[in-house]
Amino acid sequence: MLASCFRRRLDLLTPGRRLVSTAANASASTSTRRKRVVFSGIQPTGIPHLGNYLGALSNWKRLQDEAAPEDVLIFSVVGWHALTMPQNPAELRQARASMMAVLLAMGLDPRRSVIFHQDHNPDHTELAWVFNCITPIGKLRRMTTWKSKLVTARNANDETEVDESLLHVGLFDYPVLQAADILAYKATHVPVGEDQQQHLELCRDIADSFNRTFKERSPLFPLPQHVFTPQKRILSLRDSSAKMSKSAPDPKSRILLTDTTSEISKKIAGAQTDSDPSVTYDPVSRPGLANLLTIFAACTETSPEDLARKYDGSSFAKLKKDAAEAVNAFLSGPRAEFAKLKDETGYLDEIARTGAEKARDISGKTMSEVRRRVGLA
Ligand code: TRP
Image 1 (cartoon, rainbow, N blue to C red):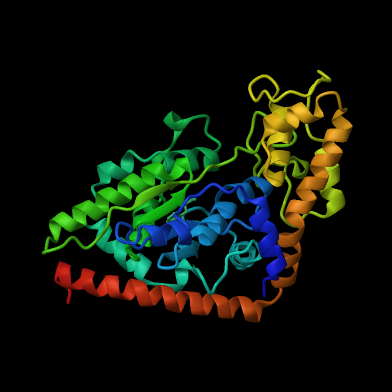
Image 2 (image 1 turned 180 degrees about the vertical axis):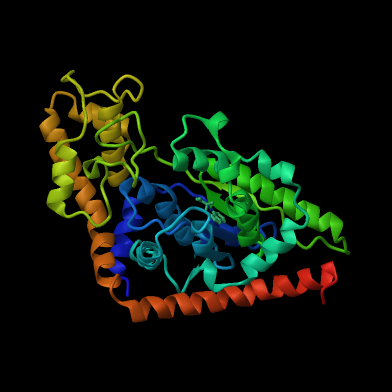
């Protein structure tokens, strides 16, 4: 189980920005505040790197810690979405299990949040079918994600070169399944990055369209809101014109949750900077140095500007040494927890099983209402 000291450490390290009302201010406004249902999903892409960690994952943890007692939090590893791109089955199996371990290692608490595999709950695909029948093709055509995924997968230069004969129905339909993920739980709040905003707009459209088509005294679905999750843009350590990425060929360009202390130190020591010896935070003209300061700041709850002032006059070697120590201190708790959990398959399976049961309890109620409204029950 997660050692509570890690939890406390993460609490200290994550910035105190409120994404969801805290228990304290919720009780002050119980008359106006309604219960929130938070839902989010993550693709099983294997071991996360620092950019993933400082993005979606630490935001989920913060949402969990700041939620009011009556709020429901649901986090899912979305296996069915992974199938929309070609996968190696053995690797997917591994990545799917690792992602569950990662969520627990970084402090999501299965007693507080529902944590489960999307593919353990058939209500998602069933509801997606119902939504397919009320979603115009034209709306999906306007989504940009399938285009960019095809561009990356086929090595095309831009979206005008995308060959639609290679577009599978599943990838095209990805956002409808995502809407079903959210609405199966009647989620009211969805923390996702900016790149997912168009999917959330489609989800609201679908909810609205269902509510109008199958109108009864009250609408069935809420129109879920985007919870803005401040995403830190973490760049490749080797090429600051690109984001840190799992698929970049150079492993030294990224820091993984599983990297050892010495690997982290080496990667940071080799991080791209520039020849100006002063230390300033200037993401436009000094992106490599700014990236280093952003990473350092995110791990120590300071601002990159403050760090630049503090280190101006020091050598890059000193800055890198201290940054590496900070990253190590930040990752060491979750890394140790992940190392402990990753092979505890019995425990992980049990968490996934009970998570899916809780998820199905909620979504099953929605599906009964859906079936009745559309005339299938
Ligand atoms: N599409 C999301 C992504 O790629 C993952 C996702 C699937 C999701 N279903 C979701 C996110 C439902 C939020 C809500 O990051």
